[in-house]
Length: 245
Image (cartoon, rainbow, N blue to C red; front, side, top):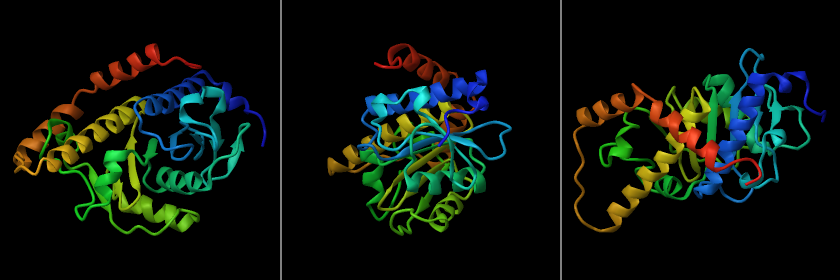
């Protein structure tokens, strides 16, 4: 592999590298990672299918901007000083290419993954306020097919999203997509919070109190109509989780 090419020193790309690294460190801070597995990526604007991806073998808590690698639309590493994990290339390359998603965050975070192990497979978006923000935005992929070690499995997952922002991958984990890193990370964080509330509520054995689908859709529309809170959250993370922290 080569060291970072000129595109990596473009000011806009440097910001994306730093923000992707910040999202990884923040996810580690909140317990959303799993060892050195799972992957975050973001498409480079006007770069013919190139995207940024976290490297193989680093804890999310230690990733900094210069650790991020650049990958092409075929899932091959173009530049950077680290390798990338094979399933990352196949899943993320396919979702960027087929589903046209800008930012793709894939985790096995505990509560969301717990729901993928159930018959329902995903989140009930009529329960908590946190869950309602995802109403109409979730795709359920019940067809677990082993590790994504070939292009076909990555493409199958990409098609299973069916244009949705959030994918619950049966017996596996979740994919959260967004047009920006800060929006996607905010959705990732609150998705796990919503899943935790659902698991805890069901563990009480008491009857649950869902709202109507119309009300859930109203809340989803309210959240998506103004994302300043998402931007402020990410700015707060930038202040409190600096590189090397």
